[in-house]
Length: 180
Image (cartoon, rainbow, N blue to C red):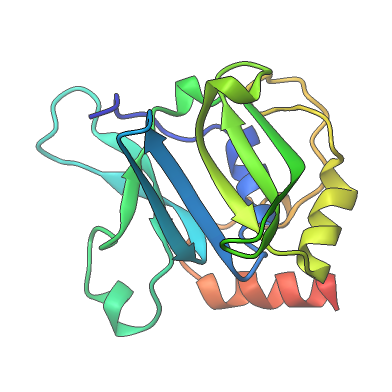
């Protein structure tokens, strides 16, 4: 299992915009032995493990759950454990795959090289995807550098809230307003 770490500001800012895309396909693989595709909406989910020892805080990459399913759980049913210290770079790039009908991919890498990808999302072309590409461009996005110039995002507009993830429905309302 990866080291328990929390997502940094750069990760959170980028993900708040990526989460506005309605249908994402989260993908990872272990060489050519197995791969996993999960279709849906995703979010970062901050988790505190009380019995985990010295590193009790972790940010999970979770499939969004709605209503009672989420309200009754302390941990999302579908989630990835990610060592965010390894996820330094992101890039939005064209990638047409007819088999699953997608047009772009967002790769999350340890270096500025798609071969170092840790996980990635496939995206179908939409207004939300075009907005994401316009805002973030097609170059490498440094998610770790503390002084990087991050575009304004939904995360920044809500950073004063005590818990960024407590009101999920208003976040998506903001996304729709931005895209509409």
